[in-house]
Amino acid sequence: MDGLFGEGLSLLAKGGAVMYVLLGLSVVALAIVILKVFQFRRAGLRRLDFVDKVMAKAKGGQIAEARALLSGRINPVARVLESAMETALRPGLEEKDREAEIGRAGSAEIRSLETYLGGLEVIANLSPLLGLLGTVFGMIIAFSELQQAGSNVDPTILAGGIWEALLTTAFGLSIAIPALAAYYLLEAEVDRVRNAMKDSVIRLNAALGGKQG
Image 1 (cartoon, helix red, strand yellow):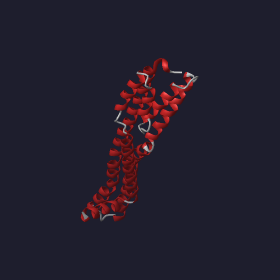
Image 2 (cartoon, one colour):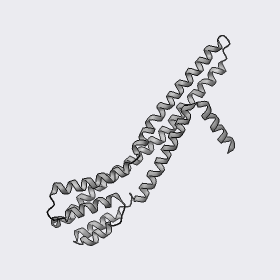
Image 3 (cartoon, helix red, strand yellow):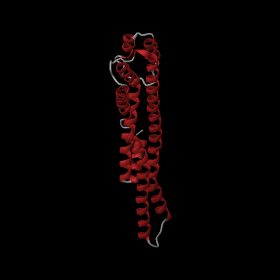
Image 4 (tube, helix red, strand yellow):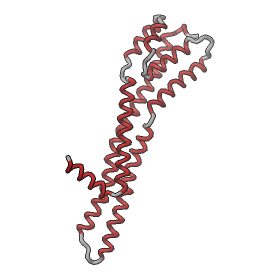
């Protein structure tokens, strides 16, 4: 373990300052992924079995029971359904105002789910560019040393300089690929929740029927 750790530090040092920047970005990316996975699991984004129960209660006119099923849930779909139910039963509320209120509630929930995802996308896009920049710097240094060597050129010096320069590109890609994959997976989960919100609100409106207003 100590040997691997020491070898890792050696590679970081050979890659130059850009490697340490990339290391910092990798830590931030990992922290974002862990935070979002914890948030999504805590919110129970995949647990939507309560929706059918709410629809059954609302369709049967058991409004209080339907609202009780939604009360206290942190699931974003539940929060939007609760807002939709509350506005549907509010006397005198115009349809456009009701849609605006539901839209506001839905947007707030989606914004919460998308927090830090933009940062993850930036890291995924920036890491390979930083890696390439580090490689360019490394190549400049390698060829500068080659020029200084003059007629006493040692191919091993050039080869060593090139592979050390390429470390930053490899490191940048090794960060960007999983970060981008995680971003798309998390964003897909947000889109799934967004669609579930729209579908649930439509179903609730149909279930409530003439009870609105």
